[in-house]
Length: 632
Image 1 (cartoon, one colour):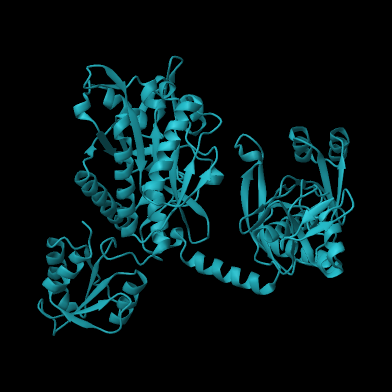
Image 2 (cartoon, one colour):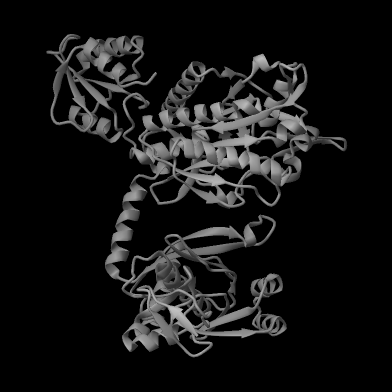
């Protein structure tokens, strides 16, 4: 057999050779440092036999920043974690432990709860394993033998995984720990030079809240200590910018256990929400949208018509009135907008019809999935639905793309675009999906927008363009979306009367650019590290009277600023002027006016956020400068 190496040369090997055999044939140093094979572009365990004619690349410890190399390193580190936990906590039951983007985790059912303080002992046990050295051995065995083994060990989660596994059953063993695993793994533990356990969380088995809640231990690992140190430094910086921390420090919002996943907006937070709402309404009006409002609760039959009862019911809050009547809080606005469009006849002259609504939605997210503002149960979506004829689709998609680019440009956000295609549970025919997917591809190409394809990630009623942004911890979140739908309007019987005096089908463009106010605010807070642009800041000006006898004039100045539509507040606390200036800096207020004996409205002492020293400005000049920065 032959394989092709990265430089294009061919390497002849005995039939059935593995990537490790290939590395040995090239040189003993390569074999010693090898951590993973990449075969025809796909990661593969070094121990597995190679197909004849494959393109082969051997990744080594020198590829310390390669995602696949880090993946296998962290996979093996996760198994060391499981071995350590089993030794320190007899009776623990082991579930699953995959590598993830920045590390790994493992889920356990502990006989007694553990705390964050227990992680140090577990980490020390892993270090002992690394000092002793571990190597991984791979074996394949029959399903019945695998099941019997894990039953005998009292590992019910492994038994369930064996029962539901597809294909061959493989086990990996290191030390006294054997795990059901497809691999790949390192040859031995020597490449793991740096490891850190980073936290605890709860997680339901298989993500189902009806199942047992397990304890998830998170960690990360690197090929070098320098890489781990740099990562932990980035992580600490990210924690400083976490929107949950900023929300508390800037007095914007909080959460309460009496309504999990539902933010309580404080006055300053509501000021921020209102600025975004004013922007949404003004831009919608400029671009030909009509504001509407629809109910929050609908009966079951509406959701059956829309398809949500079949496809989305588990994510809906349901209200059972009696044996014959079940209602649900709306998780999205589109079915209500379908009823609104259907309430009267439409001519081709009426189209396109653009409905916009920023109404409250409710989605029954799992408790373990809730995360600050970025994953909530109470959702305020900047929703819009464009009802149009087939020959208007391109123009409406172009308009949505232009709107989106303008909006994100205001926040210096450069999202990544994903074309999400037909899922397995789609409504409609492949021909219909070919058409709607094709229209979105054409729109992306017309606007020269780079994108990646999310196979099967579309909504059940239509494909979509999803816009993703990354938070301070490196997690990717979906923001806006543009979707093209031929299914839901057909299910609601929506048509328009054409110029030929015949009924024609309606297409709907679903679009939301903030995605949700909550998630958008969370990401914008992190993006600007809390120092929001002046036009968006909840407090634009803070006025500080120097002494008690300056308070009255300072209060009158605040009143004048309010009259000029500037968000201003008075800080007249009995604190030193220096402390109040420092507090304004910590609150990231764009402008601070110090009012004393020498100040007048045509000559005020103004400190700008991030600037050095004090400048002199008139009231009119300050108001004009703030107004110039606003897109409203």
